[in-house]
Image (tube, rainbow, N blue to C red; front, side, top):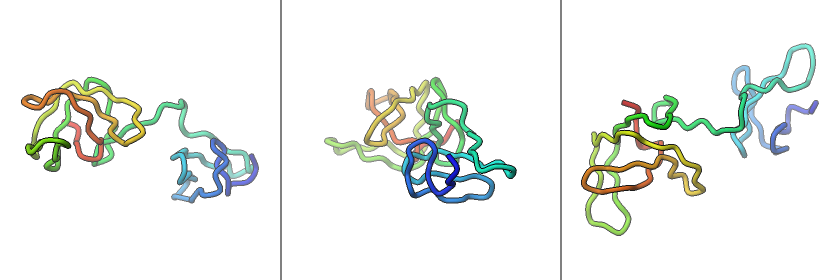
Length: 120
């Protein structure tokens, strides 16, 4: 693809330039253009989405995380408090943004958004 104004992965018309890389606002794909040609050089080696915590650290299955904000539990009067440690998380694909599956002592199994946890 020779046009840097279109994403090579989803053909979106809304990429933006961020330093040395082009980023797609629609799908999150990153690529750079070789200075000698207009062909994209792919920067991500696989199609798996990289899930990061609130501070930009990469998360992986089996990691331990700490909750950084009080989280109200839907359908309950209780909440998960700041500083709650969660061990052995699993990363999942979810359309609603809850991409961390875990078990929290006293609450049971639930899904969290990665933006509300930090890697321990």
